[in-house]
Length: 201
Image 1 (spheres, helix red, strand yellow):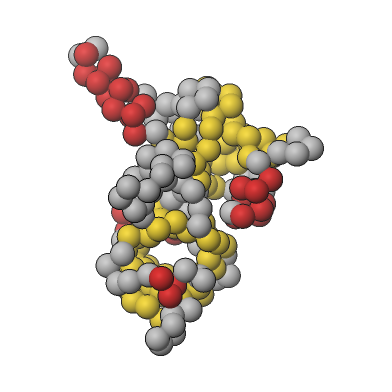
Image 2 (cartoon, helix red, strand yellow):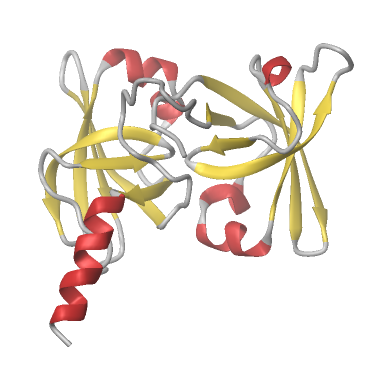
């Protein structure tokens, strides 16, 4: 489980295909603090550390994405040197500064507009319509693993306002119109949508 508060921006050091799997090596200053079998969110996608690289004080680590993950997230289009938002799993008893993020990406959205608002940035993201994936104004959404508050909402899009600190300390300042992003909709909203759908049957 995660909170959507990004700890570090890592960079893709290598990509190695093996059958339908993709082995990904990530360089990060968090590498010395990780351990094998630990869950780490990468642009909001929970992956397991399978190897630490760099000796006694690792400088990188390796994770593996399977075909299902590659098909439903942006990971299949990652390139060497690409920046990636990284968050380690939540420590029990710690403050929940963002919102409950599972690291299970629901699908991808596309950046439709970027607006510099002289102190913050407003980002509009379009996504496929789904009765299970809804947003509401002032609700929560995880974009590339980052916990954000919804400003405007429609069945196929939403906008978020990003403060300067988040803009600079995540990979958001690299976003361009047309870029794909990973989306995880609020778990409470997903449960409510499913329960309402069952009542209507």
